[in-house]
Length: 520
Image 1 (cartoon, rainbow, N blue to C red):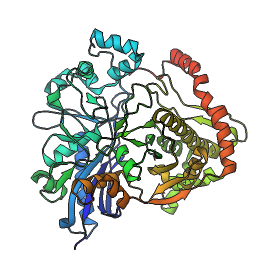
Image 2 (cartoon, rainbow, N blue to C red; image 1 turned 120 degrees about the vertical axis):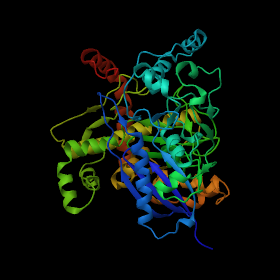
Image 3 (tube, one colour; image 1 turned 120 degrees about the horizontal axis):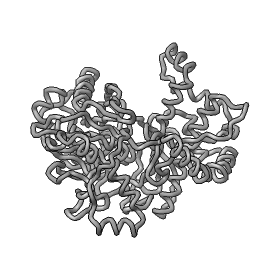
Image 4 (tube, rainbow, N blue to C red; image 1 turned 90 degrees about the vertical axis):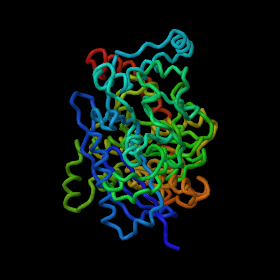
């Protein structure tokens, strides 16, 4: 019997990857195409050519075929996973009307729809008025309607990036429930579009006919259409299976199906997730996101700029590593472990709070980053280790919030994303959390999660439990070191957990004096 393969397409923030997986979860072939950087016509904006996403997908697929001898006839199906919250307006011909607004975009609008008195009263009684107002101001649809009404009037379909790519592949406006993360009228508890009386229809200018049909992860969306087959090289008629958003796919790609396994993602946004069949709001009125498993939720806490801070450090302080990496033919980040290992746990008292971007509640809209404890002993190595430690402290705080709300203690961790390739980052994570911390057997966990969806949808594995069991494995495990854990426990409980509350008044004064962070 010939071997069977699944094609996973992973459209991240910085690149598009086309990956062939076998039914044991091994990568058989891979190609990666770097995306053009998002552009900013105004401070805080982040936009990207919508057609550019599709062209990068096509290029990644064509490069994949050139790099493998696997016959296309062995490919049983395709699944797409993408970055979350990136939106695209299409006209009646299915053409983009404007650049995509990327999830990193920080623009806001004060010209928002009016919500009925009954809903407003309910929000006031529930003490969530500020959260609703944040939703109204942040919603990209409200900004477009207010500032580009001619664009909004021509908008036939309003899609997340996942829905756009699925449309380009099969020709139908269908998307996965597992990809619905953004300012859209989605019922996160019911895992469907919001009911006709839901307040979100009042809060947004979106109508139901502007949205795609939704299917559960692991469902067949359609088949690869003729035009897409010609542009991508994917065989005509290949089944297209619904996957989920990249973070949700990472969770199952790392093997985190049980609620006691915490899944950390060390990517542009750093997150901690568990999969739960129960609807649990870790932060009141902030819903859990749809999981990559039907009928389940991801109880996620995120640090918005996360491991983006590693790139920030590289650009600002990593000139030596960049030069050395060029000589050695490796990535600069590969040399940063030497910096971490040159500094003792706790960074000799240097503490970093990684709230580089304001939030809704935890942190709040006044949030800023902070570094305290500087002394003449500190150098850039201490700062780099403090960045990694600060991110782990923030995610440990998220872990404790998830445990408190769900009632399920975490017993082990899995770490995905670029930061998981650092042994030093893995070890300090184990030490700070005090839990065994494992690296999955493959780095491409979001792509693997999409492939798992495809395998279940095509009946190649019986169900998600058996697919995850067959296609995921634990790689290297890092055990916490008792002496390091004691240092971190003390710093976390006695210093880190007190930093934000004590700095909030100063953050607010900074905003009043300087106007930053500002409403864009």
